[in-house]
Length: 219
Image 1 (tube, one colour):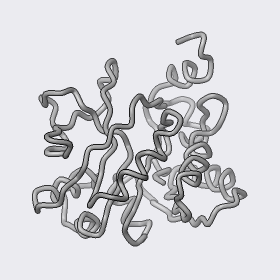
Image 2 (cartoon, rainbow, N blue to C red; image 1 turned 90 degrees about the vertical axis):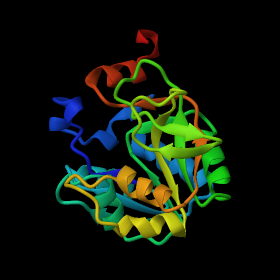
Image 3 (cartoon, rainbow, N blue to C red; image 1 turned 45 degrees about the vertical axis):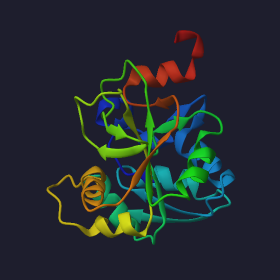
C-alpha cells in the first residue's frame, strides 16, 4: 500500500494531514482499501509511509490484519516505494488515495491471480490528471501513451508476478523512480501485462475532490 506521498495538489489540507487518512464517504481511504483487499483474500500488507507517517501508522496499526510498515524518507516515486516494501512476489500494489466501486477490487484480485502481471484500467472522462495507456487485445502495450486510441487510463492498482517483479530492480531514470517505467521494461522484455477493467474510481487529488466525495449532493 503506497501511502508516503505529500499530496501537494491537496494543499492546504495536506499541510496538516497526509492524503491516505482523508475520507471518502466519511471513511479514511486507506482503511477502506485495507478492508476491501482483506475481503478479497489478501492476507498480508506492507504499508509504505513517508510524509506525516505517524498519522497513517496510528490509524491503521490497530486493524486486525497481518501488517507491517516500511518507510520512504523522501518522495522518490512509486518504484522506490515498492522497493522499500521488500515484499516477495506475487505483489498487489495499490495507492492509498483511490476508492473503487463495490466488488471491483475483489474482481481484480481474482482475475489478476491468473496472469503474469496486470494493471487496473478505466475509461473516465473529465480527469486530465489520469495517465493514458495503450491497450491491445486485453494487454497493456504502453503505460504512458497520451495519444493512445481507446481512452483507457491507468488506475493505481498493479499485480506483479515473479517475471514482472524481477524488473523492479532495473536501473531507471530518476528521482523520482516510477513503477510505470519498470513495468514498461517488463513489457518490452516479453512479460504479458493484462489490462483489467476496474470501472469508475473515486480519487482525492484536489480539495474540491474531498468536498465532492463526502457531500454527494454537491456532485
